[in-house]
Length: 241
Image (cartoon, rainbow, N blue to C red):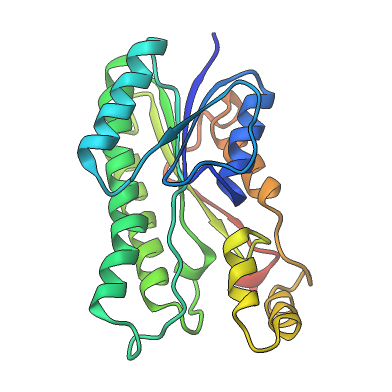
């Protein structure tokens, strides 16, 4: 049976590679993002979606599940970055980051469960971060929001462990994604900033979006059917120190 897969934040970076990886397996993939992707992927359907809007999330998940007859994999990957400490973080920034990173994952998980629990099967994969596991300077709201992703995912996994629905999460380190590219471009010396980011990961390089996507494919596969409530760390050794 062809699986039906929803990926939020799918227009670039990790989400884009998730869409491509699942499509390469022959899955029916639905790419969801506020912005359209810059290029197309064969057999991938693109949807405009604001993950902060519960009515929109519920309607899209209902439409996809009704069309396919099932919903098998949901990757709640949409995320928003921040580069401030607690003192510099405004309440508005905090709310904006939490709205996407925490509330968006909550809504995607909730509406995935509505369809997966009745069919007693499904895999939910949420994108957290290594920044939720160790203290990273100037990531106050971001780290807190990704910590919320881990806590929610663990709770969902425990509550529904006997249902056939699995919930796991990914903890990427610094990945060579468009968001990190923008972060470096804003620095006074972009090359020096890149070297700093590379140096903090013991492997001496940034992660690649395709490497994170491969972990999502694994967690969604039959090979991982005994895995729930687990976070895979893909950080080049950052949290091993």
